[in-house]
Length: 168
Image (cartoon, rainbow, N blue to C red; front, side, top):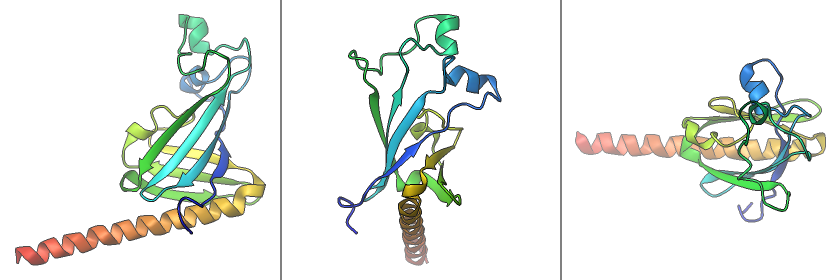
């Protein structure tokens, strides 16, 4: 399947659980922010697009405490901002999918810089919730991604072997 014709998988990012101060600071007081997006596999990267919808009049705990907040990413017309990040396959440590009814894709990275702006990212990993109707496609996308990671690892080993053979 060509990368241009491959469908993207819709996802949501779970809201804060309230287990920590970070969760409280990330969430809204008037409800959990809705984060929706699309996950796709490009020729040499994982493509993540997402938007964060905020209900009118809602404020984060941080905005109430310190004032202002960071609404610069939201368009002036009040619509949701669309964000995108392309994660090179070399910086992806693993991708897994679990779930019986729906699914959860977990992406684990070798470099934290890609998850800095993504709401719901926890350190070096990100969990994406997939609706039941998209589960099979999500499983196929993760299988394709795991295959690409394996090919990348083998290519790296081949390069190391060739380098060692040249040195001897």
